[in-house]
Length: 381
Image (cartoon, rainbow, N blue to C red; front, side):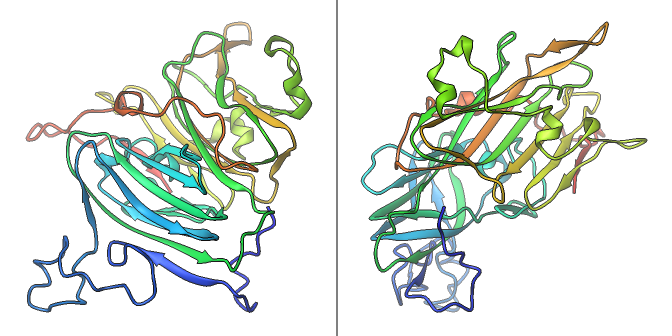
C-alpha cells in the first residue's frame, strides 16, 4: 500500500491532524474540552468547564456507539481505547468506508487488539500495542476517500463504560492508490473433524494480506501446533475446493508465528514472547480447577512481507497433534482467528456477524470468595 508513513515527521505535508474523543466528538478545530455534561461532570464540579468533564461514554446494553464519523478523504492513523476486561468479548468493533453500508471491519473488541481470552496480556508489536491494564492501541493505517465510520456494539446485558481516542489525518484529495483496511473474525468451537480452520474465505479482488491473530484453545492433551497454514492465491481459487493446492504453505503453527520446537525453552516449557511483527504473548495454563485446558494467543504481522494477491485469496490452518506410531492426530480445538488485510473494495464477502453466544469465552469462572483459591497461572511478557 503506497502510504507516506506518518513517522516521516520531518517531511512537510498538506495533511492536517484531527482527533475524536468523548471530549471532542466531531474532531473539529477548537471543539475539544467544551462539554458541560458527561461522565466526569461530578468530579469536575469544583473546577468548571474545560476540566475533564467528558472523558468517557457509557454504552447501554444492546446498543451501538459511533466512535467516529468523518467526512472527506483521510486516513485513521491511531486508535486508543480501553474498557473493563469483562467487556472484551462482548463488544464488537466495526469500521465502514466511504458509502458502504457493510462493514469492512467486524471483530470482537479484545481479539482485534490481540487479547481474545478476556484476560490481559502485554503486546509490544508494531501494529498493535496492548498495555497495562487494557490500554489498547492500533496503528493499522485505515484510509478512506469520502467517509469513515467506526462503531462499537454492546452485546452484553449490562452498560459498558468506554474511553477512546481516534486520531486521523485529513487529506487534501482522495488517494486512489490507497486500499481499504479490512478485518474479519471466525471461530471454530470445536473445529470439525479433519477440517482446517478457515481464516479468510475466498475473498475476491486485489490487495494484500497483512496479519493474523489467533486465540487458540487446546481441547486435548499433547502438542497441538503441528498443522500448516495455507494461502491460496489468485489462480489457486480457480480449482474446485477438493482439488486445490496453495501457493504458500507453511510448515507448522509455531513456525508461522515465528517460533520453533513447540515454543518450548527446555526446562521452562511454553515461553511467551512479543516482537514487532510476531509473537506468542499469552499462555494460560491449567490451574487444576476451572481452567482445565491450555489457552494461547498468537499474532503474525505481514508488514515487511505482505502477501499480495491480484484476483483473490483464501487462508486456512490445520490443527494437528501426535498419536502413536508418529502419526498426525487431527484435533478439534477452539480456534478464533482475526484476519487483517487490505482490499481494493470497501466491502467484501464476510462471515456471519459475531454475537454474544459465538464470542463467549469458555474458560474459568467467577472467583468464589473466602475459599482460599488462587488465581490461574497466566504467563505474559
